[in-house]
Length: 125
Image (tube, rainbow, N blue to C red; front, side, top):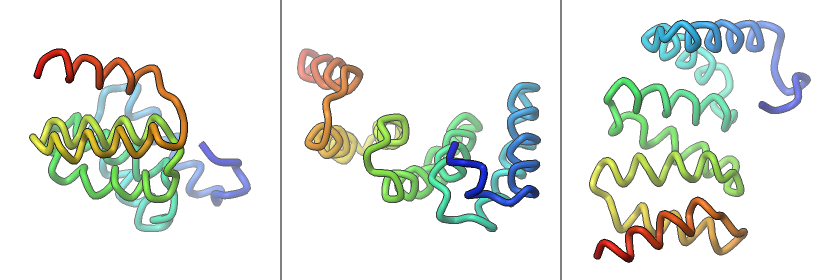
């Protein structure tokens, strides 16, 4: 997460609540808290990616996709956010877009996980 000065005390409190709800496996509560956080900080890649991941875990990959895209747009060098987008696209059968995201990321930096994923894809085609 970004430095705490980046967020208000209320946002940090909500983030702590979201983490506690996640630890309790209360994904609907996590979704609700993160929706509030995103409405107050749509420029937070962490909030966007975590919300997207939560939506995906709840089985709503289509709704997760724009939030993964926003997280990657905000922090294009985050491997975690890029992989989240990749897996979301792959799960939605947008395989070409998923591979393009992997290639985009690999143009800027190496990634053992992406190298392994792409090798596996290539071996199975």
